[in-house]
Structure formats: structure tokens, C-alpha cells
Amino acid sequence: LEPEQTVCCALSGGADSVCLLRCLLELRPVLGITITAVHVNHHLRGAESERDRAFCQQLCAGLGVRLAVYDVNPAARAAQEHCSEELAARECRYAAFAQVQADWIATAHTASDNLETAVHRLVRGASLHGLTAIPPKNGRFLRPLLRVTRRQVEQYLESLGQTYVTDSTNLTDAYTRNRIRHQVIPALEQLNPSVERTVSYTLRSLRREDDFLHQQAQAAYAKCHTGKNTLSGLETLHEALQFRCIAMLLEETGISCEAPLLERLAALARQGGRWNLSGAVYAVGKSGTLTIETVQLPEPLPEAIPLQMGENRLFSGFVLHARLETVSPAENVANIHKKFANACLDYDKIKNSLLIRNRQPGDYFVLDETGRTQKLKQYFVNEKILKEQRDTIPLVADGAHILWIVGYRISAYYKVSSTTKTILEIQYYGGREDNE
Image (cartoon, rainbow, N blue to C red; front, side, top):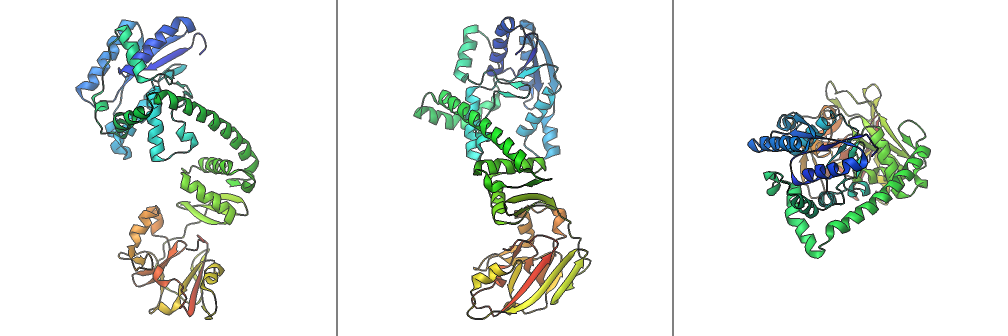
């Protein structure tokens, strides 16, 4: 902090935020700073929310601190954005903070909060960056109490004779974080009574290493980012830097990433191929290069088209090419699957004329060798295929039985086996080229 700067304390009225305000006021003459406060009324707890607002107003009036109060409506936001009230409340809170006129905004996260956050993220799954939990500084947000435990907060307030309010929702186990606080943390404290301080040191160590890796990744990204939405030379990097560079590429193109996707795309860059990321956006790997590209989506077929040998032109730029090939008894079936780039089907099992069409109610395919089936609609949901894309994906169908969801997967019933005598090979030009 620089002299004459303004620090605004995010004040809920709870023990942590009241402690933070009192600490900042003690530091005010030492640092030569101005202290203000902000209270966000979420209106989620009825009379209790009004009690908290009144307490903060009375507290700031008694301490001579200018207080800004913002009224927000998380319930309406949750309904509009189809998210939890907890997430909506956080978004409303930070939207209110964005309106605050101050150099810094101080929030009252403690070492106890940091431990709870680390456990929460560990359970849900997180990268190294995620496991560093709450940063001490993020933009203009400061967390001065991040090395202070909740017990120390309560002892400090008791020494001052300072009162505070308690959020009744913190006493229930309705939220995951509360269950961690009430059930998991006490169990950890039985193993190590100083677990809050121990984990605090660990998180600071992880944060230093994460910062170092981030710097290395930025330098590597600058070298590998050889073209628009393209990374080259990934194979020369340590795997940790590969993953971070791929994550940076996805972030640049506006695509959210998770650990399984990063692993898949790193493998894609090594092995080559194409993977659908979202809608018409694909990741394409070739010889250590990874590119994010948008491809032309097919249009819905005006009507079903009988599949014929040779070219089947669906519309401009999209072609299905079908041909038959006889398999000699001595030929290795595993090599057959590697030989063809698209769909290889057991022609001997096809009894009716095949159609190329878009989806219809009742469409299904066989999942595996046990004969289990799955509705096409459920497959699209499971694969997170956008609704507007589902009506454009070409299908090779025998009645309601889908032999090939073009570019995605084939029905297990029609897979080539050791008894196959004739193979129907179909190549698709203009879309995905996965071979499942």
C-alpha cells in the first residue's frame, strides 16, 4: 500500500470482516491510508439480512468510517442464469464491488477459508493453480488476513470487546463448504492440530512454484504460438508446459478446459487426428502441431438419400464415399481397422437398403458386444453435442438402427469381426474424421 491510497473493507458484519475493519483502522495512521467500507445486502435471509445491514451501518457510524450499501437480487439472477443462488450471490457481490471507488478492496478471507477452499478443490479436482486456493492479491483485491486463523480472529475481537453478527446459514450443512468446515476440518485437526498453519505454508510454496511454471509457460507459448490458433513444437516441451500452453490456447479461443481435455489434446498433437470441442469448433493435431479451427457445418438434409456405392453428394463440400472390399480369411482384422480412415462396417449383417438421413424419433444404435442399445438422443446429450448441431449430423441408417453417426461412432452390431467376409467402407469428406 502507498500513502494516501484508499482501502475499502468488504464488510458483511461477520467476525472475519469486522476483524479486518478493526485491523485496517489500527494500520491507518501507520500507513497513512484512508479506510472505507462496503456492505452488500443479498436479501436472501429476510429479517436477518436487514439485521446485518443495520449492524454494519451502526458499526461504521461509531468508528467514523464511510459505508456504501448495495442492494442486490441473487435469487432473480440465479433464475435468469440457471445457476445456484450461492454462485449468483457471489457474482452480484463482485458486481457491486466493481462500483466501489477505491484503490484497493480488502476481503476478510482467512487461513481457515484457505484450507476449506483447498480441500473443496482437491475433492472436486483441480490443477496446481487451482490447488493454490485463495491468492493474497488478485487485481485490486487484497486478503490481509490470509495467514490468520479463525480462532485468532475471535480472540482478537474478544480482546477488543467487539461484537459481530452470525449468518445462520453458516451453522447448517446445506452447502458443501459448510460440511467441509463442520466435518472434514475437525477430522484433519485431530491428525494435526496446527493443520491450518501447516497447509498455509504448503499453499504459499505451491503458489511460488505455480508462478514459476506460469512464467516458463508464457515464454514457451510465445515460441510455440506460430500462427493463428496454432501451437507448434509441443513435443519439445516438458509435459507440464505442454498442458499449460494448450490451456492458454483454449483460453485465447474462448474454450473452457479441464484436465481430461488437456490430456486428450496433448495426445492429439502427438498422434494426429481431430476432436470436436464445441459446435463447429475442432482441435486438429498433426506432427506435434495443434490447431483450433472452425469448420463448415453441414446443412440438414432435405430428405433421406439411399446409400449407393461410390460418391454420395450430400451438399456442397460434403461427400460420403462408399465401397465394398472382400476380406481374405487370413487377413488380420486388427489391421483392417487401422487401414481405413473412416467407418468400416460388416456388410454381411446388413439386410435392408441403407439411407443417409438426419435424426428421427426412435433412432438407436448398439453400444457394445453385449447388445446393449442407446437412444441417439441420449448419445447426443452425453457427448454434449449442441442442440442446433444434432439435426445436421448425417446418419447412415437401417430403419431406426443407426449404423454410423457420421464422424462420431458406429453401432457395435455392425463392427468388423473375425467372421466378416465383406466390408462396407465409408469415407466422409468435409467433417470429422474420427475412427471409433
